[in-house]
Image (tube, rainbow, N blue to C red; front, side, top):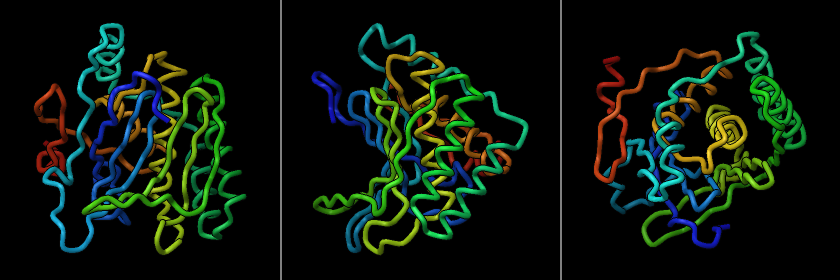
Length: 246
């Protein structure tokens, strides 16, 4: 829920190509942020309607107006790497999550997710966060498009929620999408508990840290990201250059 005096919700596109998902939707994955909350959603353009012009982009937050938040924002943007465990433990646990998802058992998926988050929290020396694995994603319908909620994080309770089934067909989502959401939300947790930021902004650094954790959990090579400045102090990823490798 929005906090009193919180800034308006910020929509940001997060293209699946960043994570190299072979099962990814061709549509854009984006965040909706309100105050200290963060929610991951995927955008579906309904048949016959115009798709957003910036689909396929990954756009960062604009710098905050509050002076006491500006330093933290710049620091979040500056930190482009994340220390990663080298013992393969996260990869092993992620494989357990994938196996549980194939079986379609919410209890087993939640147990494996809790193990993943506990291991990550132990490595980063932060308090463990809670996890709830829910069934079908909430569906929100707008005039010419709809969204499905994938996951969210509440810093006050240190609780992550993730949904494992699609809103309409009630099918189990792809493992890549689910794992990327889990890593993304855990990086919000790290922003508060490891870095001590007063808020968790979607900076270039944040997206690169989330991608690094995802690739560590999947055992896949990371992709170097190239960025282009846009209006309002924001940045978007330059996909042609990124896909060329420079």
